[in-house]
Image 1 (cartoon, rainbow, N blue to C red):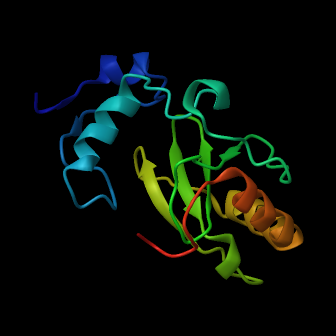
Image 2: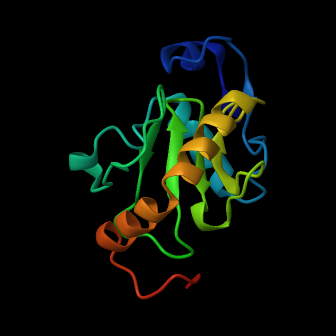
Length: 150
C-alpha cells in the first residue's frame, strides 16, 4: 500500500479528498507516522470513551469542542492529552506552561493543521487557571513512579 486514497479519506471524515503518501505525516519522523495516518484515515477511535480505553477525562478543565484526558498508564513529566477528534492530538506539559507559552508536543495530526492559535489560547488559559488542580488530578489518576521520563 503506497497511500490512502480520496475515498478512504472521505469515509474517515476527512473533508478534502487527497492522497496521503505513507511516511508523509508531518512532525513524525519515525515508522509510527505511517500507522497513525492509516488508523486515523480509517476512523480508528484514538479515545472514543474513557470506559473503553481506561483514559480518565480531565475533570477540572472546560475545553469546548476538545477532548482532554489522562492516559491511566502514562509516564512523567505530568501531562494530559487533548484532541480535536479526527484532526490532531497533543500532549500538554502543564507544569511548564507560562503566560504566553503552551508547552506541548504533537502526538499526531492529519494534514497541515494542528491546534489552531484559538485552541492553544483556550487550552493555555484553562491550564494557567487550574494548574494545581491538574497536578492533583494527575497524581490521583495516573499511577506512576514519579514525574520524570522513564
